[in-house]
Amino acid sequence: MSRSKTRAYHHGDLREALIASGRKLLEEKGVRGFTLRECARRAEVSHAAPAHHFASMDDLLAELVRRGFEELAASMTAEAHRVEDEPAARLVGLGVGYMAFAAANPVLFQLMFSQEAVRLEAKQSADGAEAVRGLLAVTVEDVLGHASGEVRQRMVDFAWATMHGFITLVLEGGIGGRDSSRALKTRGLAALAAMAETVVRSGSPR
Image (cartoon, rainbow, N blue to C red; front, top):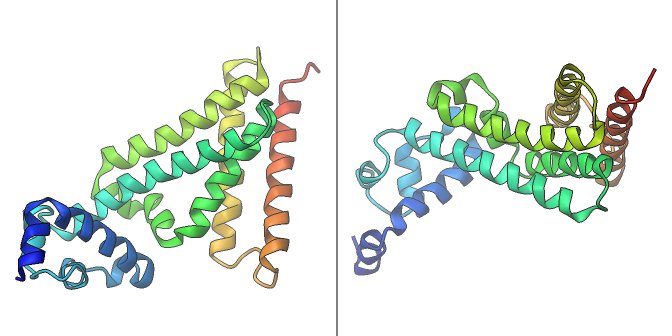
């Protein structure tokens, strides 16, 4: 190993280098093409070096899932903060952030919500999903005000299902296969707006 690589290793950069190379490899090859040896090769270290930070390929994948959920929550929060201070608009913003993260990281996103993620590290996956649900729950509560707990829970489920369902269909080619990126974005915003309108109406007196 070169002097520069040895110095990077002792400064703790190897872990981050492996995570970065693993992230790229995952998006390029998917879980089936993911190996710790290839991550090491891309990080320009020996194939045995990753063992100092990740005991197995699953450990590295679990870390990617954990960070993915952190980034997803951050993306949702950032987009919600961009819009006017109105709960329904913030709900749409959360959806925009959700879809933007998924579109930028399609393989990681699908892994995060897969049974594979549950197998890798059930607690991290569950905690990440709960954090996403928490963001939605707070905003839905702001939208609905004094609606019953049952209505709020149902609308959180509905909001999340709309966001996740739309972008998953896009990633899998079920929606927008022939659309331009602008047209697809317009369709996504329309779906989110309709979702927010439904949430608002669910709290109206009948």
